Length: 115
Length: 116
Image (cartoon, rainbow over the protein chains, first blue to last red):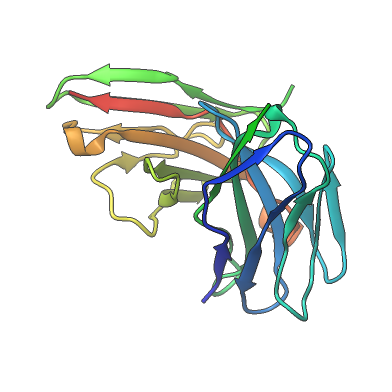
């Protein structure tokens, strides 16, 4: 079946530090990959996505590259800000029997950025 | 502006009460989902619907029920709330199947339910 494994947190960084949150996946077929962000007290927001191998998704200074050879989609940001403090979810969407495409989430990584 | 709305944002209710969590979307999405999020952040799919009059149970067993009488509306009901139902409930939607796997889900802001 499909699954997503992401780096366990919590992750605590100082402002302007470099961020990496690791994400690897197992899927049948050709999945699309996503990173979602959840700010305190809110629902999930789509941060970025990549739909095929070697695609790079980017948004708000965050980047992730779809690596089929290593089945990975690591999230990176060169200089984090306090406002980036949130929970980050890696997810994939792939065929789940018949013609159904369901989103499969990782367990989430809590990031705290200190000033 | 197209969006997905959940009400109420916060609800504190006594044990044994019947409650309905509302979810509506204005994007014309066929597919809708309910997730329960535990304090450890993990998301658990409890119900989903692929269209009007279609509802299915998700990966996590839940005592709640759902209905889908209109495309835009996907309410979740608990007939008799218990403290074990205390959680954050997130509603989401996604476009029709013909757009394949390239689209993620759009989420509402969630309802934080506390049963005392």
